[in-house]
Image (tube, rainbow, N blue to C red; front, side, top):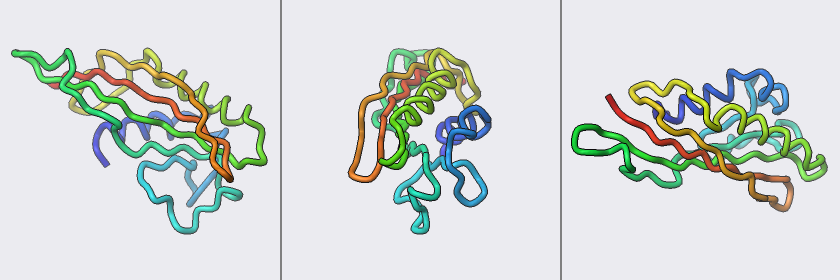
Amino acid sequence: MSVITKAIFDRMANDTILTNQLGVYASAPSIFTKIPLPSDFDTKLHAPYILTTGEVSVDPGPTDVKNASGRELLRDIRTFAPIKDSPSIVESITERIRDLFHRQNFIITGFTIIVSEITGPVVADEEDVIGRIQTLRLMLTEP
């Protein structure tokens, strides 16, 4: 897991307000950083869950200049709950994710966060789940 993925995961996994709204899988909050999900994961038993698997895009960005290295990246954070549940469950989770990341400073080893913004959520319902996607934008500098 990259330091960026670890920082995003840790920020969510260490927040009890968020984790209390999630299902549990393997004795941990249902937060995943890779696909496919584990073969024994069952939406009916382990959801609601969060999936964030890597950057949608990475760009040198305005922090990458002659005398400094930086990058700007976009990362989707997807939240899902069983289709039988109320959309308000997913909406509550996405609000907490916004609270954790929008205009917030958190630790990413080896980087300084210049900008942290969340857009969305946008609807991403599937046949068996209610889904929402938020996009995290990070503008980072490297020492």
